[in-house]
Amino acid sequence: QDCGGQDASFRWQCVEQPIGKLLFRRFLEGAPGFAAAGALWSEIEAFEQCEDAEREASAKRLRSRFFTPGGSEHCGFLSAAATAPPAG
Image (cartoon, rainbow, N blue to C red; front, side, top):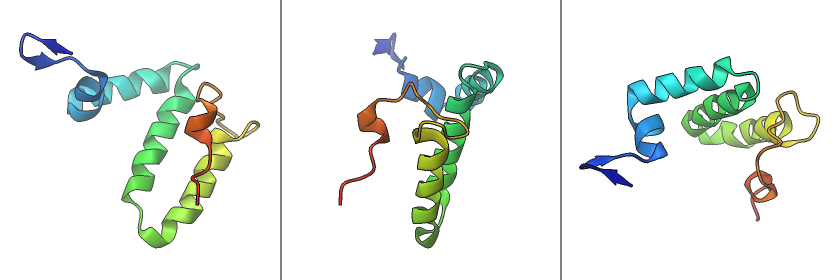
């Protein structure tokens, strides 16, 4: 979506723009219903930065913590397709 030459998409405003990203993350962390989503976002960013040798263990921790019912910060709002383990 384009607003007068400015991209108004979520990605541009809350991911690519540092101040937008910071404000949105603070919003997530401060809202009890969204705190797990904020933690998931932080952990996914950490996962993207980890070494290849650490990825499998990190992915297992992510699935256990956020994607598994009963996990410490289960994100039940995610679809089954989003939380399915990778094929192969």
